[in-house]
Length: 199
Image (tube, rainbow, N blue to C red; front, side, top):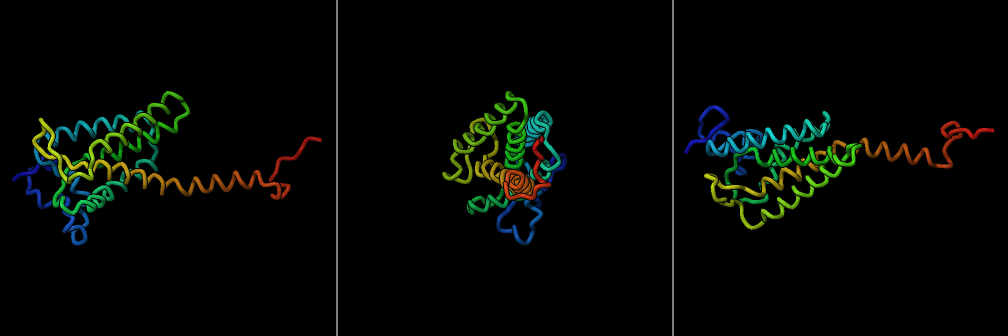
């Protein structure tokens, strides 16, 4: 069996995600996304990467958003350990679902109401897609017309991992914002911190 690692052809067992080797070879949580089982698999993932890249550009993702996506990449594959029967995994789809979730979140925070609605609809669509794939019913699913099996848990894991990283990276700023707003409205705050009343 051959796998397609972007432009070169190598043995899948060299780079794919394998939960049995997760602790001994943790780099597989990154390289697993670059392994593809057929030219069709690679082509579909490259088209998905172009779409997520366009979404990210249109939504105005920040450096913090990009960092959240980068950190969610390995976490997405670690999440696959919830299905021990999935012995091998390769492909970008889980990571791409995480990128789409981040773009949806960024769109939903825009000043323009239409963009906010697009972001909310995209986010809701991702959640519905992940639920409709019923990842709890099996590690792999065959789809007519595809010459490779899908691992639906990867999609859910990608969305959840990206959401978790977004939460962790934005939590300090959110806490600081809450504490500053509460102190400014606190009547017991020192007088020099409150606006003076006109006389």
